[in-house]
Image 1 (cartoon, rainbow, N blue to C red):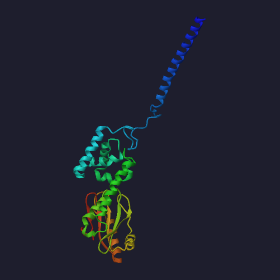
Image 2 (cartoon, rainbow, N blue to C red; image 1 turned 90 degrees about the vertical axis):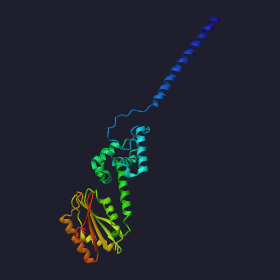
Image 3 (cartoon, one colour; image 1 turned 135 degrees about the vertical axis):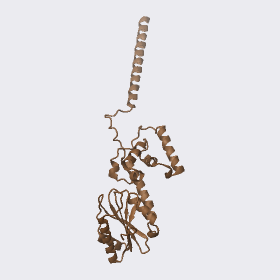
Image 4 (cartoon, rainbow, N blue to C red; image 1 turned 60 degrees about the horizontal axis):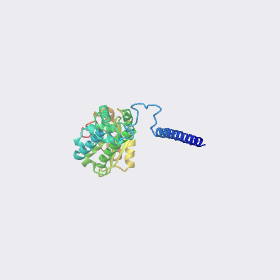
Length: 287
């Protein structure tokens, strides 16, 4: 009987040991399965290269590589110490692009933009459709560039609005160049002045093509009367960069002058804005 009892005890121990071994094996397998669920999922398809928006980080969830972070900090330090004049165009453009592209090297895009448009000013003032054609210039990049352009125009406008224009002529020319010198199509603007030659309004009257803009003298003088203006300065740009007036420019200017004379308004000047210089009708003897 004792032998049978010992045999039963040994059988129970053996079964218990097998059960424990099986439980341990299953536990390890379960841990492996749990670990596998925490591994990152592989994408179903590899995204096309070069089509990502600029805000997509180069290393998802990672920090900027030290060489990029150090480069950015060096540019910021140089700008704070020496300002814009101490920096070439491509470095100033990089600083603008930092906010739009937080986790990638922006130097290649800055170089591409400058190679395409020529200089910093032309990049900032390039049209949205043309900027959108540049690889890497997504909505965030275009927004930053257009914000810089808008800020520059507003600063220049603040120097002339509400001030005597004829005694702030250089500031007026700076404003006209900032707003119009790099336009890709012709734009016609009218500066309306009061009796003290203070600028009371600056309005774009028409936009045209690369070499023509339709202007209606009656609409110009009508708007002057609505604003109770006493004098006008006409401004339009030549996208070609050459401010030499065309025959159409001369004819249109004379028509507006005749309409102003008939209503007691004064036409002070007509400025044609080129890429790097301007032409004054009055200084050139056309008025």
